[in-house]
Length: 285
View (cartoon, rainbow, N blue to C red):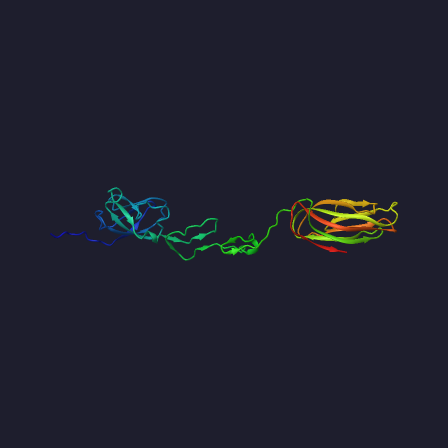
């Protein structure tokens, strides 16, 4: 007994519509299992699709796994191949999209995120890329943190707050004479934050009667704290001042004596915070 097989025709045409596609072909009079259909699409689909050839009935277009098409699976101007499966769609028949991995993707641009991202499955046009940044440099990344192979070197110290923990200081005798403000010590912070500056002032020489010693603190030339700190004593008198500083500021201590017989004397300047760590460069005069 000889079984006559259906003749496999070259069925090709243009399908119109967005999701409800229609197509005409003069050789198609019915749908049969295994029928091969190719069509040129005219509009990007926006969801599940059906195809109706010669008004024989709309049949769903499915992926190989049986799932409906998703938005963008069919591109305007793309050519697609289908096989008719008479037992698919619960026995009601469906067109199965062939080579669905060949869906045209075009240009895919990936912006790095905190999680991995999938590269879309399909045909790419070669113009896609992963975005980069000129700021992806070691000095812009926290120390020892690895971002895409770039290991950070940036060190961010904890915030500096007013306090009593000495982190730096100068212990050099400085003396100034009468009626002229004279710089005796200065420092330049290597951080931005809040500090407590401690310094001493005392009289050297004279007899102490109406012999006032003066001190003044300036940040970048501007007086901070009291207009002047004063003492008559020949013993160390300590003062403290809380101030906000920025990296690179110039903090200077000036002293002056009222008397021609006595010197305004400073021995100590301390830099204190509510914690520990580096950090100032001191100059003595």
